[in-house]
Length: 466
Ligand SMILES: *[C@@H]1O[C@H](CO)[C@@H](O)[C@H](O)[C@H]1NC(C)=O
Ligand SMILES: *[C@@H]1O[C@H](CO)[C@@H](O)[C@H](O)[C@H]1NC(C)=O
Ligand SMILES: *[C@@H]1O[C@H](CO)[C@@H](O)[C@H](O)[C@H]1NC(C)=O
Image (cartoon, rainbow, N blue to C red):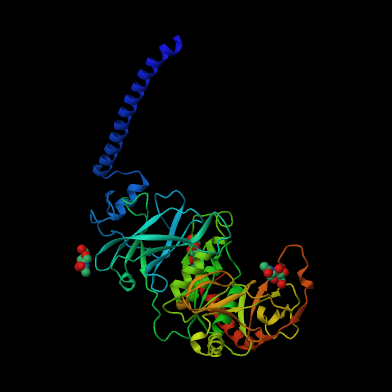
């Protein structure tokens, strides 16, 4: 038809025009990309952008590397690496922070980094490491959400910087500096730098018991109770406490400072820029527990994971190391003995009456009424573990042991988790009517505890005036 006859040559011409246009555009876009790259490389010391600030800090001028970073030798980091500070990984689609780095020799040869990022579909990253002998390496990395993340958008995460094929042994990474870098942005200057800490257990630490506590938040302010809690744990054999400061009151801060000066407490800052309870499970506490696991590994024979309203009270032995050693020794052969022991939870409600037989104004002396039947294992239980045999901690049990190790429950006639709680579990429900019993096991320490608490209060009145 006429219409077609006219349209065909017209369309052919149009197609040719479009092709030409695309051809030109292609070169134009390509040219702009090349020009931008050149300008960025040659650019003088620009100021004003946050990016250039980091580059200035580290003496990197946006140096571009190709492939595995072998092309251009990156200069050594110019500023000191940090430990126990949340630092950002730049250039990722989702927020990505790193906190600390540890040597991993057991599951895989790696540097294990405590991080927080998107639970699923996290950005791919690589690691760059500066060894003490000045070698620089770029390592492949595996990003692995820590299991207890409650399906929230963000999660405590491990980044495993893999040493496979690098020719470097885990031991050689002690004291190195390491950065986590977005794979999308391999040429950019790192925005984080961590010190690699050793995890090799020292000798003679078998009976050391250390305690991990989740981050303090909501300006934690129960200093009188915390003093009793510290002193009873010391009597029970604890020799060190790892604590994280999201927020705490001034009097609690002063109390902790007082113990810190005696070398009893490691208090670490905990300002994670991910919204607690909305984007990540309570204060990113699983990152704290697992930081504590690796931080304590070289000096703690045992690690106890409890909260500040909980105490593990042995029912025969006077200390927890004595209990744990006895429990382990009861297995035959000893190599089959568990690497973690779980303690069953029993609520001691603070609203229940005071014990008429209490001989001291201490919570653990006055509050002796508890649930008659403790909770089942893994339901609110807390635990003690051997750090060297453990890979990943949860709130109520161990998620992953080193190959060959296992967990076991502790019979209720050997120890209980005393959980001193102000209120009922679920708001209005009248929990005070659950079947209960009076348990005066904690009275075994009351006399000694009162002496310690009274002594410390005298000192604190001087160093922490109200
Ligand atoms: C590493 O580099 C620093 C600074 O250039 C130098 O002082 C030091 O001797 C080097 N160390 C080794 C083991 O080569
Ligand atoms: C706890 O952290 C806050 C906020 O970062 C800080 O102001 C305070 O000094 C810290 N307290 C102690 C005892 O370190
Ligand atoms: C935990 O124990 C309580 C009290 O015995 C019980 O009501 C609750 O269902 C248990 N939770 C789970 C997950 O088993």
